[in-house]
Image (cartoon, rainbow, N blue to C red; front, side, top):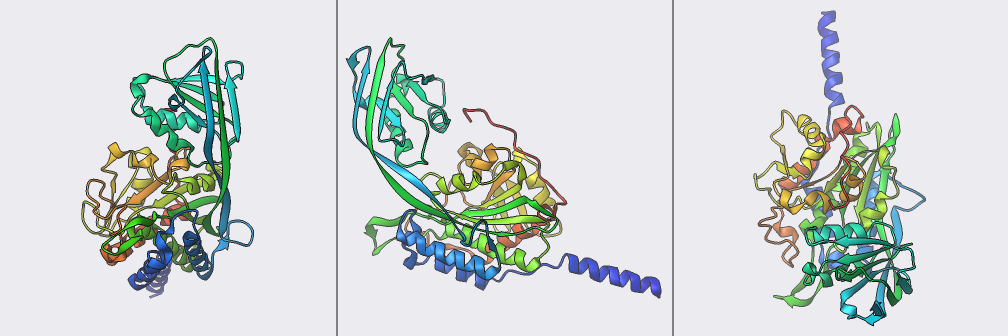
Length: 425
């Protein structure tokens, strides 16, 4: 009899230890409806509209019982700069060249570069991946003059997108179209510089025994704003799936884990701004952490529709980069849910979403999504509205993320690190 009682007590304890609060689809719908409402006017970064969304997310974090990452506010503010060229002059071997063959990446009002300036010389050759190498050089932090092979003449003007907005830089990068080895050159560019304020929304649940180890749950809350021309009376890009769905998941997970109350590692919940215009929110956020202390990152992007495998499924970008996907799937044994490897590897999604900055620093930072890249009918369209989402399935996905993360937040499992990538990745 005594042995039976001991077994019964043990069974009750085990059941309690794994007791999971359930997510309510009505609550998921409530959050989603607010974020994707017409009142938010598409949540475009850098507008008063996204400020309303930030206020709502902050209120939800406070209601869930989170603490600000720093200070007394859930807003993680930072400033971007938008340079606008007002004049440029370029000479090579004392001959003036067409300024359309020069792109200057800077955040200074005036830049003057010549062969005596001490800038490093780089090239983008005909065999290089033009876009990838140009982006890598632009964010290198070095003073560079980059000679671009004329094979990329048609693509060269696209480099101007790299200078539309950025963080304040201490360096300059000058791209010049042509395979020159000049004796002398002079590039002089003048700009006006506009400062634009932005804010992520970030809250934490401090860990119990491993407070200095972090697990991040994130999604971006900005979208495209208001269209210049209405279609059928509609001009608001509601962004219900992209990415109000991911932000809804972050808010729901914050409430879930607070109620569960058993996280040994510190949990960070982040809603990023400015993903749609360059991923600036996640880049700034990532720089505030020592990557060695981040155990894992669950970035959540577009989970409101069924994946290509149907309900109760999603994919993980960069599945083969770490063993995190295997850990999550192990924790889902006994359920009907399955995480799949990213089927869209040619799209390079692992390095295109808000997980990318930390992933490049070795963090097992992955994006979870259901978006069908070959056929997501409402992507970046005015029709991306709440009515197109499957709220029951979306709730199941969020629950699966919560369940699968269990051993990571407890410290029982630590996913392997991402191997460093080359400059041209």
